[in-house]
Length: 66
Image (cartoon, rainbow, N blue to C red; front, top):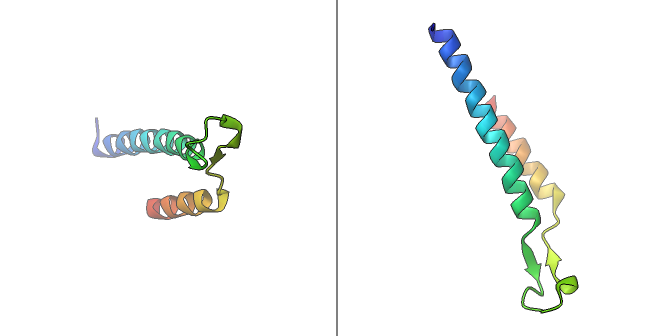
């Protein structure tokens, strides 16, 4: 295996791992309760909903790839 194909394999594996982590962490972030978390009535719970913050984080991560 040449150095180029090793590097390509490492980059591919890194993109797969970080892409999967990004998806899972965004899902966990969306499920976080931020208000009325102690209320027994689940319909009163407010969840984290800030797509701008998530978009900025993804943009920053993509810039790091450059």
